[in-house]
Image 1 (tube, rainbow, N blue to C red):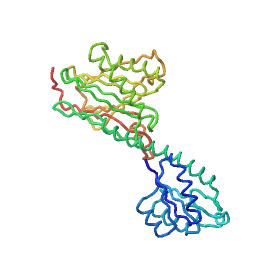
Image 2: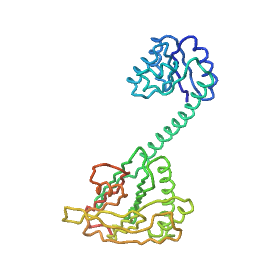
Image 3: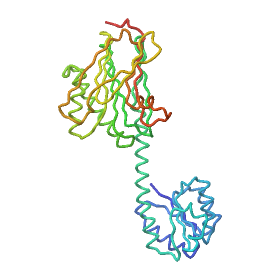
Length: 336
């Protein structure tokens, strides 16, 4: 990553600034220096540098105001100027750093170096976030739509990354579907990374269920809980199993308080309450598995608390990640 730094400075300071920037080469900077205002504007347009060093002797305040208006304050500006101009200038509010004249090499070097460390950290974090956002989109489950059932979902991060995770597995041989709704604390890169860790734990536990090592989704949740306690990760989750042959839905909750049911011939959804300790707090925590018959159900929604809270808040503001499975039963004449 080459960080371009453009300096539009008077000739008496140009050599010193080039020398200072050259000494900062370990930060992978690319210095560009000119003492001509018009060339400086052209170089700025061409290179769009994240850092700009200006000189009040070369109309620095005018350039700063012009560039900030054009860039919407995206460029960080260092201004070389005399102290009295800092105090008297009415245009100083769009300057990020002031470097007093006469030029103090050490002060300028330390100031730029300090900013570069922070800039590089932020850029690396932004790059990680961009990669994570892409991976997040790639890892969303496939929707299901057949003659008997349709499973859609909403996955809406509060920010770029979500602390929620949706997992959907099909066992077509036995006409079963397994779903997991995961809600980790936070909406940042760390929260998203934790959802990946939790997903892997659920993946292995569900494999044990399919192999017959576990006999219920309750055991799946209890196994994941033990692993999370050792990792000191706290997670809310719901696991559900849809068995079309038996015409049953089984579900277990760990810290997610609600789901919604719409019965046949009804125009409204009923909010159903669930109990269960959040995963990761107590190694010997036990969870209850509940069973409901599909026959009279048109739709069921398993969701994180983000959707429930948003519906309850009357401010019309989204304040959390929102994730949910929307399950529609098309026919009760399932295979058996």
